[in-house]
Image (cartoon, rainbow, N blue to C red; front, side):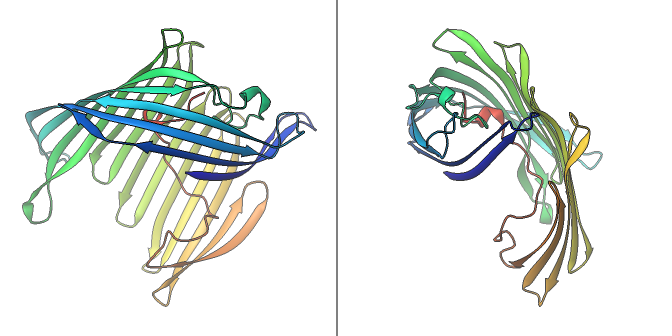
Length: 321
């Protein structure tokens, strides 16, 4: 994984700001094996991050980290004879898959201390670590009647509580949960939260609702980061005609009581092979831009416009200070 960023962070003071160019490379090598019923996945990772400026703005530097670890898990299954055919639901038995996982994560001191770096996000705050994350994944699957009346499997819920044990101190550390509910194939609800036992604060919390019905798509989500941000993001996308589509996107910051970004995109298919996007964006200022895409590869374009993105679950997150 390679990430290039031109970063800037502003503060209330007229001359207070952080800025730097950051090039981050993260590589992980793993091997999936089994010992009896246990799944064992050893892994080793390395991360090199270039910064154009340090915290004092005097020099560029490269920070390196080494991240070995191992995941050990086992699966348990049970099927319940539960049937429900009401309110549009088609549930024919429920299968519960329980997967407890112990994930060991170790990192010695990085080659550059985080106090030397400008702090923009979790990548800059990386420090030594020695902890075990305990995941308890619960998946619930059912079978629904598809075309021709054939029963097809579908996942309807996924719930993962987790907690960390810090091996440096022996204390319980982060506690959290990640949940996904899909009662219908066209509708989903996702939520996750992480609680820091050392500070007694909820560090992050996210909630998302989305649905797709034909050519209509709607999604809304709420993001909370302790002492940083409380935002709601929403997107509506619908077809106005066979060759026309409109998308409206908005990001609202509750701490400031203002919309941080608003965008409208109108898309038109021409000559049955090219999609033309005309976008109006209001963030730091007003901007209008035009993007051409191939209809056969609609996602292969310059990422200029905004789209609703659901967050990455904390139980699967690999970045930890």
